[in-house]
Image (spheres, chains in turn purple, yellow):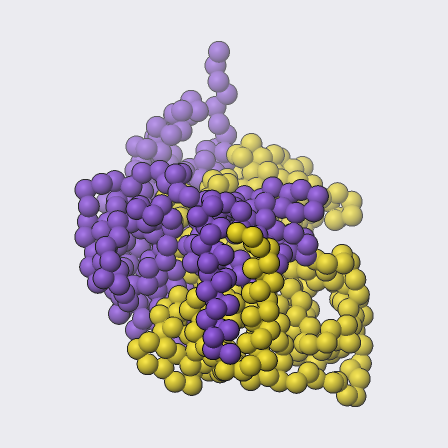
Length: 299
Length: 305
């Protein structure tokens, strides 16, 4: 059965869609259209390009590939200013490799933004009023550690051995936590099977191990019960699972650093009870008893 | 005006229709009015515009006619003009967003949320969009209401709020607005209220609406300001952000001495508990007693173990 050929406008829009996804060579465009039984020559494509250019697209050829800028995304000055703060923060906060990834995203984004807005954006990037949200001095202090650890994060995550406050830990680095005056590495402590924050200022040595990070589903979860007003207003944290019952709810927390979690649970007062595992329940009771004892003695 | 290059005039007209619709909903008449301003487009009829819209639909655009109430305007609900994010780009963007949520003021976080909302319309893959748009706590905040509260605070207003109390469900609260605070990744509205002995601290995501704006009474009885001094382990500063109300009085390699001024004892105790075992000393006896009493109540739950 003969398939109906695409109309010219439809072919132009298909080319536009293809080019906004990625830069393409002329041959790629031709074979892309052939999939719909539309056979076009170079001259016709040149006519389509002229049409797109007249409609406001900027098409440029670099190294045999065609790049398109199709200005359909209009930003307000406030939005561009917000983006510039994000870019400045990325340059201060991310490793060089990650910052390059961010800039690639900006390049992609700007293929859909009008030239005037892009120029305005370049100007406000120079503007000292739009400051980074994180201090350059802080990230500079830890730059080497961040660069080293970043290599072992993400898809090809690898276990690393760190010396932290004179102890050695085998960890899977997961992400960085940023504070106003410090940066912590959040990682999975393989020996104790818990996630933990490691302040970068106390990491004195980082060594690569040949072991690839594997699924961390075996990490120990903490289960606690919440009730009363806490149950009604509780907001789940990342990675938490909640089962609700009439008078109470059971929360299973897998991701949070235990120390941070226990501090949070202390604030919940009598509305919360640590249930499992037994070791966590005991640790929490110990924490409460130690605090009472410490401050009673002080009193 | 003649076009210098060889172009497809139909293609050009459809791209112009697309450009108009991408800027916002438009009726056939409005599209026609915009098209006549383009010199090389001639003889535009409503039927032609209808056909052009159908061509756009065949190209994958989801276009809806908004009906009589909206003057039969057409609106693009979904556009196939999108770009792809690589896994690495997505991960960098999400890490950056999470750092912003940890570090920034709510005002910027909201602006970033709005910006991402716009950008994600042009990003392929719903999973990527969901990950980018996960602004944690801020997903529960009604930004219009938040803006209204900011404005009312600036004008130092007294208001009647409808609040979804975790204890009592919906209730009306009369409050003289003081400020909005961002603490532990949550937003709180504080103010003076006859319903509360201390300063009222209400979680913004539990506020349903402003029911009434009242003229502030001449005198507001403000609760007493308490100044608390305490010592934390020096390392604690690496794992938490100090609050604006906290002032470092002195510090050495082992300890940091902090002064906190607050008119809300409940918040003070919450803050002290949040330091966990990093809190080593509380100078104020009354606060220390309240702190111990809260811990003792927790201990009671585990009685017998």
